[in-house]
Amino acid sequence: MDPLDALRAVVGGQHVLTGADAEPSLTDWRERYSGQALAVVRPGSTEEVAAVVRLCAQHSIPIVPQGGNTGLCGGATPDQSGAALVLSLLRLNAVRSMDLDNDTMEVEAGCVLQAIQQTARDAGRLFPLSLAAEGSCTIGGNLATNAGGTQVLRYGNMRELALGLEVVTPQGEIWHGLRGLRKDNTGYDLRDLYIGSEGTLGIITAATLKLFPLPVAQCTALLALGSMGDAVAMLTQARHSLGAALTGFELMAGDCLADVVRCFPQQRLPFEGESSHWPWYALLELSDSESEAHARERFEVVIGAAIESGLVQDAVIAESVAQSKALWHLRESIPLAEKESGKSIKHDVSIPVSRMDEFVTGTNAALKKAFPGIRHVIFGHLGDGNLHYNVARGPSLSEAELLGCQYDVYELVHDCVHAVGGSISAEHGVGQLKRDVLPRYKDPVELALMHRIKAALDPDGLMNPGKVLTSD
Ligand code: FAD
Ligand code: ZN
Image 1 (cartoon, rainbow, N blue to C red):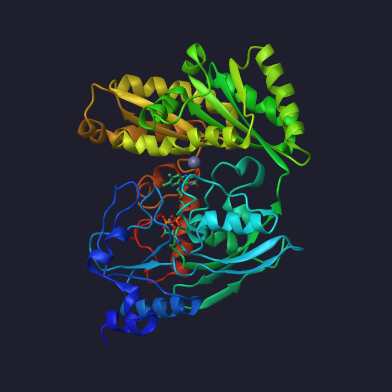
Image 2: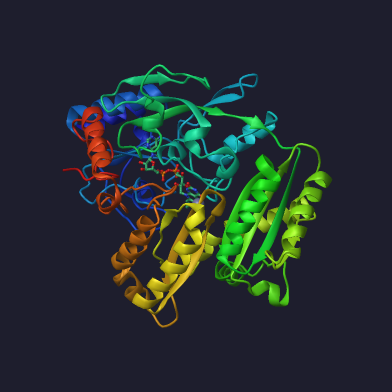
């Protein structure tokens, strides 16, 4: 039987999309990568996923798993050959169960992150993963990329938020690994291997997620800072004074906020005059188990001391939930403002916090010298040592000129990251964007082990080929 007809027999004709129906799944969110596919197939259960994978194995059809298609490294986009099948998990969107005494929930891979946050909240629990794409990214994509976001400082990234997985292997078997255990030392940790594997080792169909108590109150503050050194010193001070109550510490360059206000005029900085022109701003979030008044009081003490010592130039502590939301909205709008402003060269890097100042100062200077027309767009999760160190064009540079030097810019920035002991991918993954530069920075033994794992689990190389590792 023709493979497409066989697929239709498994999932139903209306769930095998071709032509214009398949189009939205063939380009990535940044519109940087575009590909072709045999079809986009949308199975409705784990058993159907397994049947699709077995069929593909039989016909040697490569599979590109896809969730919300919000990934930033081209991991969910097929190549130009048209040989691959895009396997969308969006119909696997059930919350299978909740175990409140165990503080866990079992959910399918296609559940949208925001829906899972809400389901947890409705049950009086917190599912803490939070990121700007939460309205459309899926739990499966979050797991496959080991997503981070704004709460990692307190709760960890996706790897720390999942206790168990259900996976369809490249051979079409189903691994039933949905354990809700916080301790399980029975051999190799396949869960941690699959998390962050970007669809190259199999398809995640469901997960057991960790839940946490809902904080009674949250308070947000925006600080104006004179230098990266001050930002790092403030992070250290806030961590020591607030401990686990500090649940967010986001850094934004003043230029990023200026872009947000320019692109979205309904948004405003809560500062006036001089205070709206500092080089850096930090957004702090405090989660409290007592009350809003208690949260504010704790913030006032810590931030008050920092202002007095000259570490912080100005500060606004949100007076209401609405004001907190408005402050977070500024932060979350940065990637959108960046997209509105045209193409940019993005780096998602991880740096030891102690070397952050040295990295930013040194790299900014080296870039300006080598590429005089560029502009920095720097923001990120300083609490985790994770910067989105992006490079855009200044007025003297055209978009084509900027993109013309992108590989040289990548190399300069990534070499600087490597020199301070950092990583070239903090939270977005490797996908196709960083596949070819990985060997330059990854320990050769580690990289060889990764190739051996890939060959052992997916000997025919049909799982998301050309992503993370080169296919040869
Ligand atoms: P997709 O884009 O569909 O897929 C991503 C990768 O996972 C691909 O390699 C794909 O093949 C694979 N995959 C997807 N589902 C499965 C599955 N079920 N089984 C196996 N493999 C699968 N990331 C962060 O970590 N922190 C942030 O703060 C953050 N902010 C973002 C803000 C914006 C505006 C955007 C657009 C993205 C942001 N991201 C961030 C990127 C982030 O990786 C994604 O938003 C999200 O984790 C991917 O989920 P998705 O369902 O869209 O996956
Ligand atoms: Zn991020």
